[in-house]
Image (cartoon, rainbow, N blue to C red; front, side, top):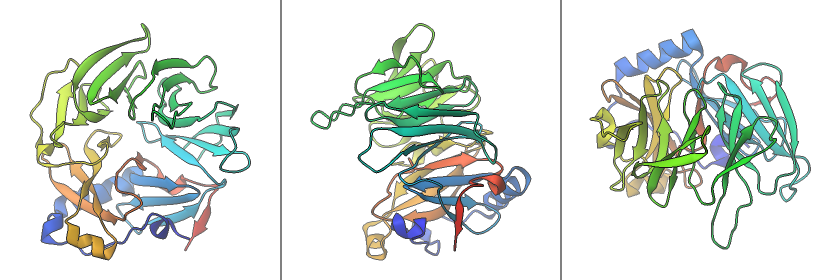
Length: 309
């Protein structure tokens, strides 16, 4: 079954309530796809969706079932984690490889509840959750080198983190507040109120969702910034493209669209002027952009996967 069916998505004709189709932005994205292979990628189980901007969506079946995919900020490094046997097995294999290249790291993980969530390709580090307590919903956050040796606990209950461009720090949210964790001194400092923080590729800014739901921006010192994105209400993290020119995110659609199995839209916006383009709609089973990552060189991505019609 194609990923589109798996996540209950349906592509709709753009309409006024979904935002205008900006031709200039569409052409710029298409040019980036042709020149650098820029695309968005999502994985659900063993179903892989690649969304280039210069052609049709591509659908693949991953080499292994129960795969969890993460991609580094450069869009050129990919990590895969998959269970060795079935869904309930703790043991799994954690593999890191360049887009279209051979594995540079391959480790067997026996960590209970292991789930990689943020890859630093520059520092060759991985942030992951482990030991999820379903009674309290606590998800301890750790970081380690790619061989998973000597993991360091960051906090016992956090949201999804994001690495600084140089891999020296992590930004994360806990109980409605955003913190930066310094790897060297193993300490966290408060940054702002909000959730779903992401670090810009130039290292200067943190994008996040404010308590009132608006897209917001601060410097790494916590100074609020005026941002063209502030009119949007993302329902997940705003992921920066590798060059920092664009962000992707998800917004809810009006209730009427639920009749067409579409409850949210995946959007790409240009950081410099806030112009936005709806890329596709999402169904009931995938209402945030957490599954979508930016990559470059999409033509070589998933070279060992099985292409689906």
